[in-house]
Image (cartoon, rainbow, N blue to C red; front, top):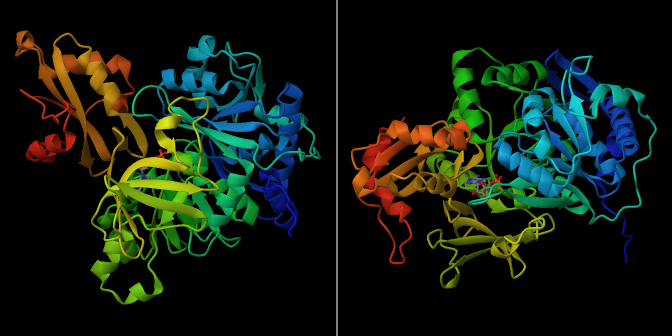
Length: 540
Ligand code: AMP
């Protein structure tokens, strides 16, 4: 028999402190680029843990973060778990109502936030039921004027903290280490809780040579937000392996990314297709040295073939397509050519690599159609089911758990084919959500809002392919007879505006006489998309 040593996230940082003290974390802040060694990051993290301990955070408490990708957020990634508390990363792009919901639902005790989130928190403060303290992560020396209280200055509490604080070790590897909420088809977001064990094993997978192949010699720049499935787990794995990290900070632009790649000699970076489309455009306009890049990891939405081709043929940067979900920590499927596929034509290779890829070790999959498991013929479609050590098995305190987690499998809601080589291709999704620039929009919520307008008889919102954002919403509206010719698009937009974030508003509202439906009266969105193909190709 073998020893059974608990897999704990805090041990990953201890490894960096001990074996890679000189390696660095480069962080873009409002004061420019700041660099810390892992020795310094380790000390600052210990100080943060001790400060949180002093504020009253204890094992199992949730600590929320509303922050961009930077070194302080990285310290929170380890400092919060360091006292056995739960790192709850909050998606700052959600509507204020959803942010309030998830803070209350997770029962966050303390919130760590970036300065630009201050106005939002001030606005919703009265609605936060469990928050006992706020910590502002700012580059300024002084606290801002605010009604948030008690408010602590991050740098101040870190400076006053204990640099030799010992991380809590009497933890079970199955204890929660983090949580993240993901959008639901309708209604409030659903929470996923990550265990120490799941995060450590997932980090191991990120280091597999046939996975993302992260190593000590990499200079990794996670562009995917740290509030989106832990920046795909890269900060955890990078610290563990002693990888140099480059954090792009707040409000980065394609230009900022191109400059960081050039100046910091980034070797690998990760993000959604929208980011890479923007970078491509920037590379075409400016003059940057991107020769250090050995790969770009792209996921969250399907990577267009043209994008893969442009990076690989023009810039000689290998482009790796991957798939995952908030519920899967996230990496589960990754696309790499098999050795014997190298002889195929360029077109054939591109075809394979634009698929999502093969399942990574330690995760199992099953594809189930109407008549059971589908044939591995690359044609028959079914829903992708997953199980494994870093796959969630429930939503946090949420009855919607039963919809997605059944018979020991996560039902992803993604419709796929799988070929004889085991390569997965996503062809559709059953969840009625639209993914725009890597973030979800609920078609059902927009439909319900439109149908609450007195002039609207029915409304269907569909996802339309979009060059930059991958998908955008378009609303199809049938007006009540009495309202026909009485109401304009603009009036409906005015009605929607106060209810949604700006980027949720449909790119177009199309008036129709009828919306095609299934025999049981559900909107037939695929038929609707076909019917509107010509019109939609003109939507910008
Ligand atoms: P999230 O939980 O926000 O990360 O979203 C996960 C969902 O994004 C998946 O269930 C898919 O619908 C979609 N997704 C993620 N990666 C890809 C990909 N490479 N290609 C197509 N869809 C993807």
